[in-house]
Image (cartoon, rainbow, N blue to C red; front, side):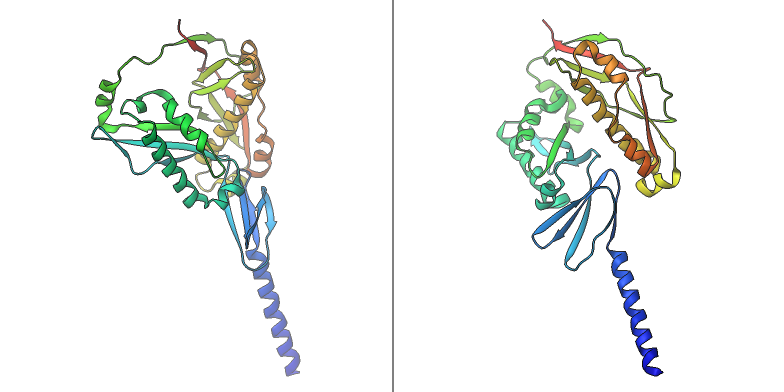
Length: 303
């Protein structure tokens, strides 16, 4: 009898250990994330959903991929005795390459060093951060972006040296003519929440450059429990970031598929590819864009 009790206890302990092993192998990947499973020299990328990752000697790393990230380049550049801080806004496009390059630590450190090196190589000056887009440095950095990253924009902060920077500008910035275009408002009801879209540069199918300013991404949290599971206790603020990124991508795609004259209607009818999945998995419903206080300009060099 004692032997059977011992066997039962051993089986029970084994069952508990097996259950714990399975539980530790359960990985939930949210719609705005991708997970990388590393086993030895091999890696596997997990798409959104619930996954069972078992086996010994494996690590799981989860990355945000649909959210614009910001990295302040260190140390600041010292130009004319003034500290200039650069901020790089980027997205992770190739998770596997990004992970192999060291992920959030080593990969970003590599980019940090590359930005400083290119700034020094092109003779970055104090007035450059005052020019929208930091165009020359932006192009240099975009061309050498490694590790599965994509540069969204580059910002510069001259801090207390702003007046010195303005005084250092040798020539006026190129004049840009803005031809306003009438926007079209979608018919569907707007969401209960909104997120401001920064001035958005658009490129049309016929090569025109447009700028959309003052538009709002609208959204609703239709399932509070799902939203909190995806975004945490600050679900509304986090959802605003996600909704804004999804809407920006949709507007760029809509404008890129239309000629300039057709863009206002294309923007009003824009669809958002991640919308259905975000609502099903995270309770985030993407609404129409609010163009009521927005302006759409056609940008061209002034004659």
